[in-house]
Length: 456
Image 1 (tube, rainbow, N blue to C red):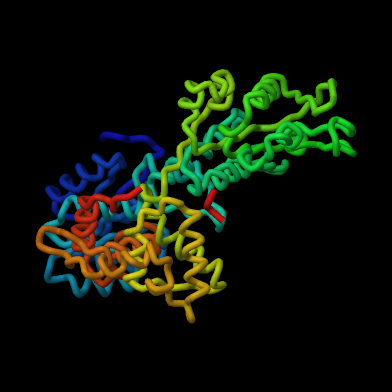
Image 2 (cartoon, one colour; image 1 turned 45 degrees about the horizontal axis):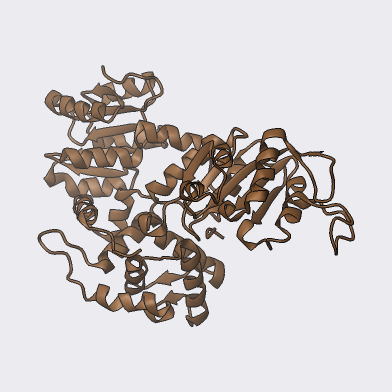
């Protein structure tokens, strides 16, 4: 038996037709799971007693007790195991009724193997996905992540959080760099220590050294008392330097020394001060280009770039747009808000050059203008609302599989609401699972629209 790792979920196939069992077993094996089989209800009970399966594929028609007859007992004794019914067309009504008493889904014979794969992955997940999910703890309520692209960033962030290595977080302005930095701190051994954030671009050039390293009284005109500075304030915790590419070269040299020795020298002092901090840096600039231009020290670049995380712009993680909009809507309206299909289409069609920060501001505006909890296109900024009419007038799904922006918005919103579970999403949309898979294929074929709190 292939892929027989004890950590891999076990799928139980209950079918009296050996050919069907072999076919289903091949699909299950190809996904990386273990398989056990039973040809009757009695054998199924024996298999469950021997090994606890993660999913049961249960044929309705079995010798002796049918799948429908044993379903209530299975759910009573093992409510945690998802059960998918395999049924002939004539038994669909019974299968639908069975879902009311515990089945999570049903498949029609002849079974579409791609649909079988989708059902298994919806309810069990891929083995490698399971491993990554187990490594990633539950996200705080203010962090929204639906897209695979952002999920990968957070998985890497969680891994690097376990060390004290410097991390360089790249990404356009407003994409969520500080949010990721705070998650790294929260997941690290320094979670109880301070998190000190400094925007290097916002520090006055004449005072940047004093702001970062502190100063002693009398160091310069106006320095009437000692100042601790960001580095010492971060002692025992995490220092986040945003827009690090804006630091003057003279300050870069001192930062390099602090990283290499763990010491800083306050302005006006000659005495080094020990400080223990973990550095997280971020920028929307191309530091390699700045190095070539002589505006950023090459040795510092390699010192802070032990681990590099790149946050994609919002236009490249469109699955996050509607969930983020709903999150911001609840935040600003202080109640759940709903977006009309046209408003959802406009949100998805816009290219969001300001990323999450711009989306946040747009939803704040919409909540202020809306009279109730329904967000309409006219409540959105004009550049976003302008896309609603064209999206709404786009042709509906054609035989070639094209989808209107409104339908695309509805599908993505429902998928996000269901946590990516296509079975539940199809049910909410009132369409068959096969129809939803067809529409998702059409979505994948579409090119994303052109154009170039979780907002830093």
